[in-house]
Length: 455
Image (cartoon, rainbow, N blue to C red; front, side, top):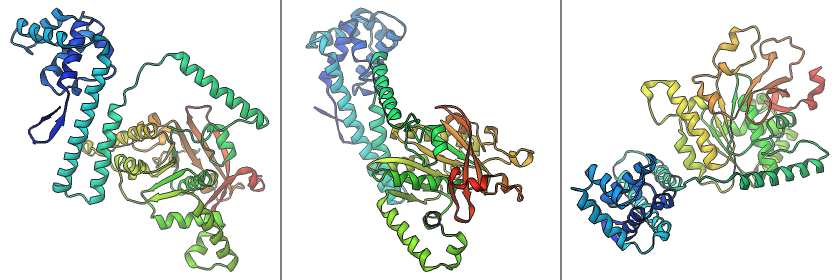
């Protein structure tokens, strides 16, 4: 059956299922708990049924017994009916017409299904209205439509209480498999996430794990963009089936790819700018291009994007493996917060963490640092140096800083050493990992490859 709202659009609903659920609640003390994890108040199309269900929910929360008489009395006292007699008549009729109290869950699922269909219809109407009246571009309207549909899907996914035994058994199975892999690997640690390709860093953070938000921060000139693009390249080459998505809010696609080519082909940035290259170097670039063609690296350089826009684009990817955002402070917020950048940044990092969990993917977001390190004798960054908001530290699973002492001390003997400081790590210990730095090629390496420079 379908009913009409004021717009003239037919909206699906099931009065019979709604009445049967109300009857099951009024006629069975356990009726409300049977359907509570399936439907919500807003799922009811009928105003009266929605109000009755709300009353039953309130009674459940206050530990009040729910039966025909108590529910009728509460509904009458709250003005849902003209009086107790009217409420009793309506609820008694619902109880009488309910085919089976034990089938309440089945009726509730019908209500939930009709609500989903109504939501889809109304979302489609919103998209039509937006396409006809809003000034945004067609691409932005498409993003809006995708977000509306995605919100409906996420909104209907209800979590449930799970007994610990099932979870514990699953975890035991995973741990047993990890132990077996470690034994096969000569007792070395096994990555639970995607390997970054930087051995010591992987041992510290156990790879790039799904649902994790990783923050990589540094003062300007330390090479954070180069480092994260080195990671993107390594992950993509080791996982040819994974989609690696890079959102560059500062540099153009062409600048990013040029830097990646130079890094992998060991071509100096000076040579790339001037064109002074040998035939061998051009051949090396061609080989890197062929390698890149086999990977699934995607780059978006749209300036000032927000989390909703990024999420919309990521949902189109087939096998998402890693998301990189360069960088946080250039992202837009959906709310102005009166120009308060702290509030805006809190919203951005919170939504990034939610997105990582929803899409089941690791996200690396780059961040600027405040000027605190410049004022200290020891200029190594600390968590308190994160710019704009403490929420960055709070929402992140892992916070890493890059620090090169040679940036400040030109006569430092370790010109080719960079410290990756893991300042927060929800999966293990914090610490400092040394990396090799080849500034001429904007390339980071495992430190053992540059051991001569470390002495």
